[in-house]
Image (cartoon, rainbow, N blue to C red; front, side, top):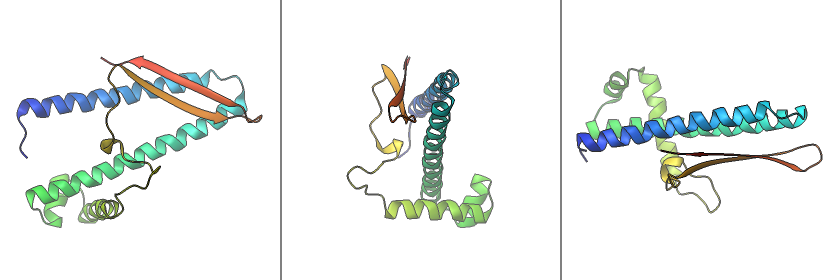
Length: 151
């Protein structure tokens, strides 16, 4: 399971590019949000944005927990060893492992259930598209589509 230095560097660049894309998309969505004249629609959109960002943060936290479990397994570490390796308390290391364990027990998603981004094929590199819908008070939809080219 050892990776070459080049492969690790490529994955790091790809990961950093993905994070940069997320930051860029957020900046564009936030700018569009600030330009919505209907204040109630803007509030509803901001609420939806916050909810979606919270889901992404939860998925990232789960990915971190799974990474901690992989480190423990790969390096055959005790709980104390894992805590020291990660620079966290034993209690926090234990929380991470419990989160990883509980996620693997319910890992097989039902049809229509959300999957973690790491389990989904990456989007084509030509475009990254973010679409967020918000229903305004007349039940019509406000849709903001953000498109930008990836390198």
